[in-house]
Structure formats: structure tokens, C-alpha cells
Length: 337
Image (cartoon, rainbow, N blue to C red; front, side):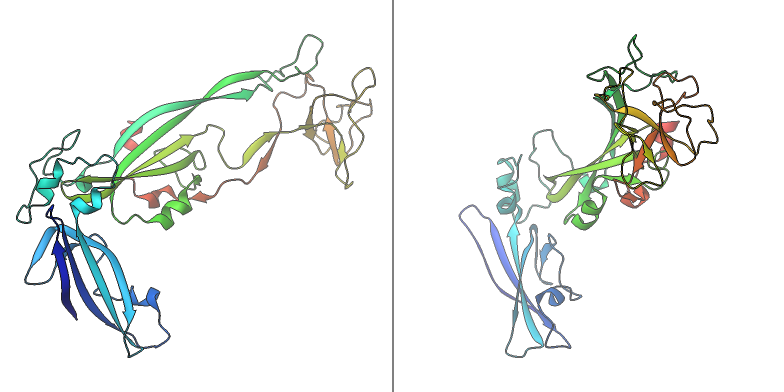
């Protein structure tokens, strides 16, 4: 049950309305959160509609629930405001829209925002896709041929040598209705794909989400951008080059002997480590000249001929979630054809 209780028009023809809905619960312990979930209550930003009258330029902006003398009966006051009032604080709002929005008989606006708009609903537009890349510095441990990055004396460079690396960035921007599902966006922020996405490997893409509140054709909506950064060597597990200052036998709880330089001094920079059972490389020697044994963490020479690939430790850092649930509306064929 609902009834109009009031409203008004100011000197700029901005309208306000109030409607009261009666909500009956079956438990006197039910509070505001349960009452606001009652079926029949209008949604936020729905237009003012009181059966025999309506105003497409005014929308619901606030609920005010109040318990009556009967603990199981509530009155929910729904407050409506005109778009001009709501948008006065929105970045980019064109004051020239004021007159059109204040016209209670106007179904569409002939005014133009910066950039222009037409009668098409912004929510019906397809997603926009932009492709770019991001550069960053990365320490050079091994080159593409598997050779260790060492100087003429077979020592690692101190400080380490950095090189330029880049990752592919795909940004998908789509218009979404108000209100925004912040729970889903929070869950997916900085997450990694658990499914094949845009034809790319599982765990290769990480998403960052941002949104801007927009207004067009009397529709308030969110322009949401999904920035997906792709990594060839995957985001999960997050790989860290395996290096250190000590050897370690697996059966021991603490680090073993320090790694020494040829002159007997302790190494001043982390030295590559290789975890071995001892069986696959029986001829490999530890830095102290002893032969490796099963269960050892072996420190190998940086240019040892039997070691052609670096060793990395993997760590679980990012959440993995199905990107298909984001409903971005972009087919893999758009980017892979």
C-alpha cells in the first residue's frame, strides 16, 4: 500500500516528491535491513510513478523507513528528486541541461552535453575496447638463450642489470546501470582469470576496475573500465627468482653453510639456487667442492654447463576467479581473428 504525502517545486522548477509504502513483517524483531528488501518497493533511481501521475525527470534517491506503533508494521517514505538537483554535483554536468530537465512535460532533451548525445540509451551501447602496453624494469638473470647474466670474471653484476619489459593491456569499457554491484567489483579487483579469457591462457590476465558516474538522455549510469594486464609467464603462481646466501639441506630446519666466493669470503649478492634430489645431476658440485647429495639445496655456478634454465619459487598472491562472470560482452574472436 502506498500514498502520496508531499512534494514541491523550487524557483528553478526542480521537483521533489514523497511516497509512503506500508511494509508488514511477520517478526517484530525484523529491522530496517529486512524491511528495505520487501518486494514491491521501487528501486533506486526509478522514476516517480504514483499510478495516476508520473514524472520521468524525477527519480527515487532515498528511503526513510520508520516503525509504527505496531512493531510488525513499517512505513517506508520514498523520496524523489529531479535530475537537475541530483546532477548538480556530478562532474561534467552541463548547466545548459537545467532548463530541459526542469520541463515536467519534456520526454527527451534537445540540449547537448559536451561531446554530444542522441536519443539512444547509453546502456544499449556496445563495450569499447582499447589495446596498449605497460613498460617496467626487470632484473636480468638469464637471457633468451639461457645464459646467466655474469661479467667476464663469471660473477653476477652488482647492482643487478635491469632491462625493459612490456605487458599487453586490454581495456574494456562498458556502461552499466545504477546502482553498481560494488560487492562483485570488490571481489574481482586485482584478481586473475581462472578460465580462458579472450583466447588467452588461464591465470595470464589480471584485472583492475574503475568507474565514473555519468548522465546522458536523462539516464544516470556508470561507465566502468576493466583494465586487463596479460603476463606471458602467468600471474599465478607469482614467480620469484630462486637465489640466496646459504645452502640448505632439506632435512635441516635452518639455513646451512654460507655461500663463499673463490677467495673464501662470503658472497655479497644473492647466488642462484637449485633444488635437486642429487640423482639427476650426480656430477654437480657444491661451491665447497663436495658432490651434491639427495635432499640438498644446491648452489650452482652461474655459468655451469649443466644448468640452462633459471629456477623460480612460486607463491600464491592473487585470487583466481572466472572472468566470464564479469559479462564484458566481448568475444575472443574480436581480438584473435
